[in-house]
Length: 198
Image (cartoon, rainbow, N blue to C red; front, top):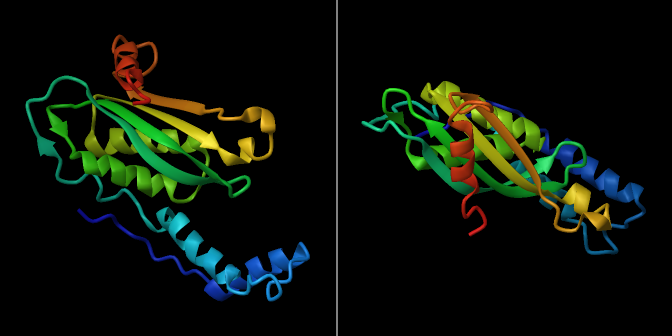
């Protein structure tokens, strides 16, 4: 399976100069502190952290698997790492997904991990990522219903506020037969919450 990539030109020199200027503005002497190569290292690292900007889910859900499945399919605790778009600090945690196939159409579990990587590896908001994943699965697999639960620990909160400790943010998005208020919503939610921390 191939994830579609988009051509995106990155001005590596401008990015490197920008990081250097940022550190210099704080009075950090890069030569004296042994950080002369830090700007380039930061740019290289962010090339990976932002790799989702060059990917789409266009081909992600092609060629689904045809089965006789009629019940809810659940996948729990897919790990992700992302960067909040407000402070460019990490947030990380797990994504759990439940969906109700339509006409027995399902996808291999690796496709869901790929979808998480597409949306997590870019400047992001947890709330938006939750909705984007839910829409992607619903549309791509033409499901009868989808529920996505994302748990996240945000360093922009815990590093700046000592009272935040190990606080966790939870977001949920649901569509179709699994949306809030539907008869299957609580059942799907329970599937995702059971033993969620094991």
